Length: 259
Image 1 (cartoon, rainbow, N blue to C red):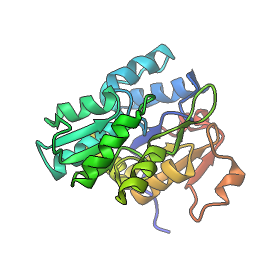
Image 2 (image 1 turned 30 degrees about the vertical axis):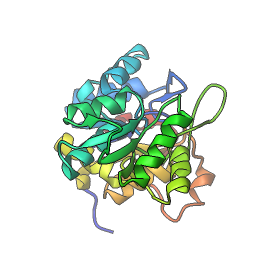
Image 3 (image 1 turned 60 degrees about the vertical axis):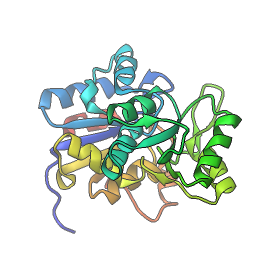
Image 4 (image 1 turned 45 degrees about the horizontal axis):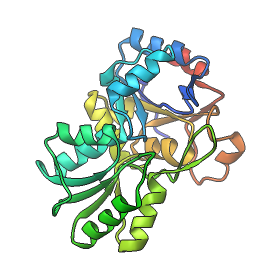
């Protein structure tokens, strides 16, 4: 195996790594503080497209985690960057919240239900039958189908909720059209994030709690991967996958001295 370069930049998932159900995970504040003191480029990533980076900054700040807006990267931003590269100044019919609509407005997209270039599906807590029906008809009429992320369920205090991937499957069943997913595990999200902070995959690391999104995305982007066991994955779960993380740790607290 080729010798790994020293880690000069860090990407970390948010839910399950830094926070869990609205509570900071012990050691998360020390890790973020160490990153900021080191001056190394870093990003906090999330597949959730509901919130803008400013919303997330405020949310993290209330939990004692000081993360600048420019160090937050969401699947909504990755989707907007992809669309801006593919069809600058295009149009889209959007199912989603402010995190997604703001990202698309910021790249100059017009949001419309009149012959849009794209149907863009993101996360929302209020998926409506009317909106899904409109999406199906627009896709059947020729709009291209884009989805922020493939997560089929999301967490809540009452238990799992249907998420973007589940609604995408419904639309696919009705149209026969598969969406292009911009978020993890698509390495596109990692590469656009690395480009945003001027980092290179060979000297970067990805920290996550999920093998099927975080670790897979980091692996396919050519980064070192760190699995932490504070989220959805146990050591036993890792044996079910045909790939492995570079390193496995109990929690983010164990990584502070590596920065």
